[in-house]
Amino acid sequence: MDVLSDAIAAMRTGRPHSSRTVRFAPWGFRFPPSRGAGFHVVLQGTAWLLPPDGAAPVRLGPGDVLFLAHGTGHGLADHPDTPLVDASPGPDGSWPTSPDRGPVGADETLLLCGAYQLSRARAHPLLTELPPYVHLPARVGAHPRLRAAVDLLGAELAEPQPGSDAIVPALLDTLLLYLLRTWWLAECGDRTTGWSAALGDPAVAGALRALHDDPARSWTVQELGTLSGLSRAAFARRFTALVGRSPLAYLTWWRMTTAGRLLRTDDLPLRVVAQRSGYSSEFAFAKAFKREYGVAPGQYRKGA
Image 1: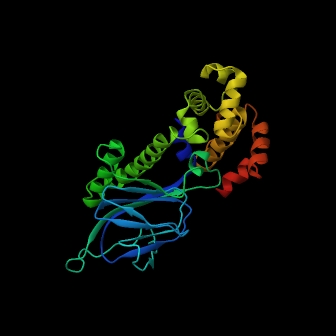
Image 2: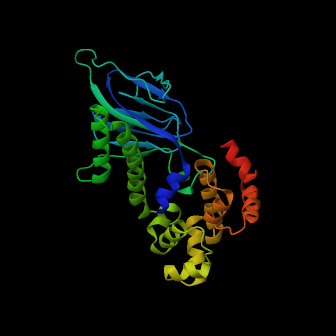
Image 3: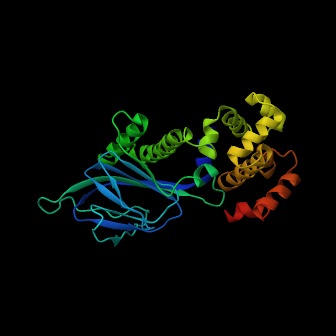
């Protein structure tokens, strides 16, 4: 898998959910902080994001996409001055719906909203460096794949048909990847450090892909440098500057992250988890895992 797909897979838990709702002015909701990530898409009309830190409200127009990667509490309303009421999620995690009809002449806003459950215990730096919210304004001809995913999701929620129960979660996963890809592609040209710059650097991005493709391999810095077309020293400096860890330190971190995911989601024998994590000895793996997580692999699996 590529780095972005791996980063999401390592953090994803549970099942995403979404809703398509109509709001009639005046309306305003206060969303509490959450452990996951969420998004709002304005399909019709306008809305205002009200950040919790007192920052200036942000106007959202038709087609605008708002992504909150860190589960930041926030307000959403038809106007910055509209009083907010607390939004309480239902048993399935979905947010409250609204009546089909509003007052005569009331402004109407059609929203597509959703949320993802993410584990922050081993958050990948690709996600931790995201700002509190990402605003992707609608522009003619911009982000066609993201727009297509939004349109497909909106259509499935508006008119559920046979297969929608499987299609909607798949579209939500697709939308999440398009949201992140769109932001990073826009940012990588303007950043000189951090993961946006790392993904935009051919040498470092190629090495990261190699590490994620085969984390069990006994990589050396020399091999990675050769793969990237750089000397060992030059590659190590560039990788460390952009990623924030040395190549082998990142490899170890990713191996342990992969091991944690396998223990949570699979019933593989520990020796197989050890092998897939780059350890030929189950004992050496268990020792490294306990040093990283504070518990033995077997205890971690039971707790998960």
